[in-house]
Length: 337
Length: 232
Image (tube, rainbow over all chains, first blue to last red; front, side, top):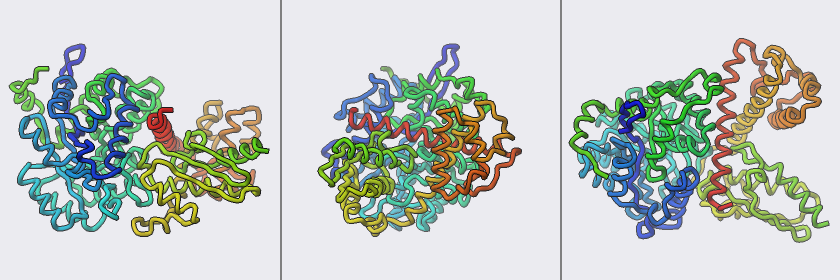
């Protein structure tokens, strides 16, 4: 919970967190090392100095660290796990549903556990999706269309097999589809970050929500275009948000474009923890105001009401979280730092 | 002799652009090393991450090779991409003069020329937007701007160094896209050469601003990530 200077309470849901193991013991090959090094560069590149971790800690952190960073010092009330398998790079996977479930078991009111699927897993994968719903009650999935599988370096959401998976999601009551379209892992298709496949599936599966993580960066303009057309396309702000500190004017331009093209109800806060720490992200975001000239250009503003929506209210709707009810539950579940 | 040849090579490298960012590899800090031994040239380059798109990495490697080949005295060129997930494939492919499709035939689909065109069009809008904003800030009205010919544009920017640079970059991309006919043509049209209507101009500007912003943002992101990666 973030409390503003004038006493307003802001309920925070971090829509994008990880609990990964990228330690040398779990690395399968050079790609595993390069992958985590690249994530670490992101942290170093855009974080205030005091939030930069040594690589050893960054490769593998424990549960206590995560809980402390998010809920004790980081203002976060609830967080959503977005698993990332990367089984071609890591022996036991990078950040699997099973690994995340350990934390959910201990703190059931604090976390939402999302699952994952990969259409290249065929029929077996459909069964695994069912298993995730039965075992963990998942309401959402995280998809990495660029994930490597042997010779295959990625898939498209409009591949026929993917359609079967979306139908299965409808059948199982999974309604939130988070899609990573952004930096780090790159498929070998012609434009690694092309978001057009999102457009097609969003208009076919109108009752599913498609959350494009990292607001389609580095293809912001294409993402805005699609989101303008499709009301069930949303944007996760992980990766874009750290610019609030490193390059506030860029952040101002990006967030005002997003508010202009998408409106204020379809954007979600996400830290991408452990890449970035929610504490400083939230503090800087709350402090931040759009410069007058940028406001004049687009006619949108980032008021405290809009910030509240982005920090929790918007995503709460997608995951059927009643914020007032949730506050009551969490009152008996206080962490002491 | 040595200093002239380095200058000639660097001039060529200055013209090699990152197709995704529309900025020169030299400006971006991507060129790692240049060695010249007689008529043989070695050029190494690096990118902000190990995972940067191999398609763009290939284009850059290939453009380096082709641009430097334009120098008549050069007999041999070796281009080396460093610290990249597909460094080996791309480096071998370039030295054997293979196309991207040939190198990655088993794992890739689509057409690289089409991708290049898509990004040239983005670059066209981005450069056009910068030039339009510059003209608007000089007090030129929207209706005047939309009726300008390239010749009139030249005259307006006669004593304006920044404006001239923006205009020259814009004209370059017009030529590359085959949109340049002569000086009498309208200076500002869309990517198909269709004139822009005054009524829809505001909306048009919003759209192309988004393209420019996205490219600029990516350029910043990549440049500063490179600095982080290599501690430079």
